[in-house]
Image (cartoon, rainbow, N blue to C red; front, side, top):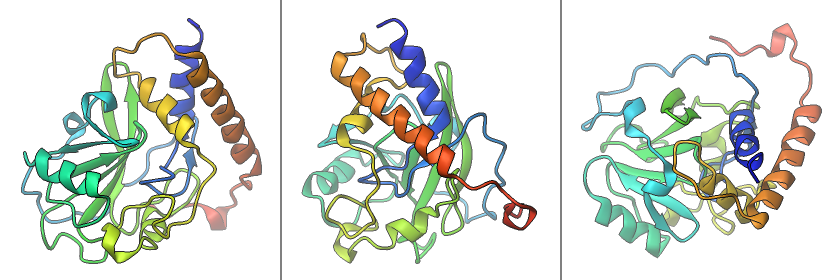
Length: 225
């Protein structure tokens, strides 16, 4: 089992898995190149920086994902997460996997995203670093657009995806997302269970298949900076 923990960290570095339930299409990268941040948005009513994001299991567990609130209203966030419908309060943080985050910004931040901002993180045992952030223009590391997935959620779900919320499914199971949660390298993790090791192995096979299916990038496909 000693070899499983580094393997899980490697999957997280190679795979920015956008949640089947929260965060849209899968995203995978090995040693990703920097991605230009979205154009400057209105100043937040609460600070958002690398330090805003922490070990996922140190957050509050609701059903199959984790929540927090950067504005201090954790009870409000938990209430909506438990109900599964309704508008999340300002400052809400939703995560299914350690590398993917959505944060509810202040009223009027962006009407099209219902004031959600999307984040993709690089993580290590000692830090979280914002790799890319933004609203409608944020693409994952396979070119999938976060907003284009989330906008399909039915209105009562406040742009949050789940198996029955109207969003397109991806081939990441709850066993896989749970294994990623429990092997977040920022956390003090117990030994990896046999079940989590099996789920991570299955996820690794998906990562390889998606990477192999990704077409070679041509100059016309190169993202604009």
